[in-house]
Length: 527
Image 1 (cartoon, helix red, strand yellow):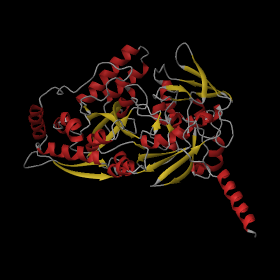
Image 2 (spheres, rainbow, N blue to C red):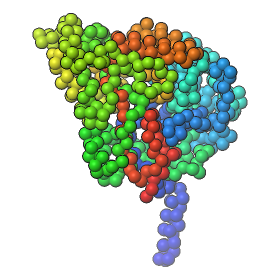
Image 3 (cartoon, rainbow, N blue to C red):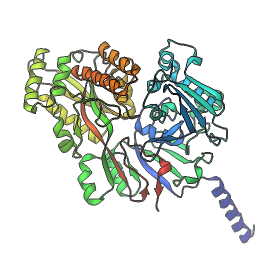
Image 4 (cartoon, rainbow, N blue to C red):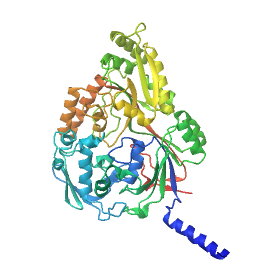
């Protein structure tokens, strides 16, 4: 072949490759922490998974740049006078990534699937405000047609609630309310989520998933707001070593860190001013006691261990970023809240707390001659390790011998769900702006009640609150429920979270918010 024809051949070949290959001129490289268990909205449970799944799927409502609920796949809705019937009009141009229209039937299919006990969706309870949802999920009702989600036509969806729910539009932004493509799931079964099969309706679509390494996305050209997307795709990196992540950020490999070693905060402030975004948000860091096994079924032991934790030093000194000590379960500032329900010993001087804790642990039969031996579990993280080491040292004053045990994120939560622990680190970030989102973690029927705390009195008051339509009366009931759990020392709240992102100056549109949700569709990257 003549040289000029050979050159022309390669030019045309590379032009063709460029036409079919995704354009990543403005790829966002994001340190995402843990390895996602799935990309199926019904099979996930963590913020590291939400960051991916919330980019590739979208519910009836979605989040704006400040994490407030706005119109998503539904362009509009009406609410009945009694607040129990929501009628949603889907966008005419709401499509799946394969070009098929998103229908009301897809939402019906998704809501029925997540409530199917066989799906075993651990977060299904977030949508229990929907009529008959809890009864279907618990197996009391077996006819899925009884679920209060109906397709009036292809583009009109009606959702009926058990009672008025002030936070419902916010709850619909959560991944438990995302549609899934009925036509693909029925054709492919559980394999619908594989890269060669997956069909999504969000602004981005997954194009590569290498477990343990990364998930890569690209723009979804079928998304109704495709023209406004400034980021071409995201590479969500799996990396639980926060020190290594910070080094890669400094080397320019990452544009955003979703966590960093807290002892590096001052260094970041001095060397990368304004890039560490440390602000309060609706989240609780806590230790959960395993109520299934002695002695953690003994309220005296739980109270002693909780009292001995010096919360005032953890945020400012152990972590160095100033987290607020938590003596209650619901973070301050949540909508529809009543008065704070702190434990009655919150204001005691710390030395007095320790002395009372010693008395309690002795009454339970433990002391120097019979030390309480505790395994304290946490998921792998420099910050979690610092807290665990500090707490173990505080417990020594009670004669408690604490053995630390860490594991990767997925393993940690899988094992504490099975009850394989004594005391374990856990955390909860608000899914919607209401105290119920936190208090539900302590209900006997909730899968995320890791310690299996069981209080008929607590559950009764929570049930009363769910039926109360007057917001002020409802808030009082929720306060009462929180007081019951705190009096029981159901778990040990330790501090209220600060979000801890590090954002490159190249990234614009990243707005700090109380829910630490930052969808890629609102971001821009300047090269």
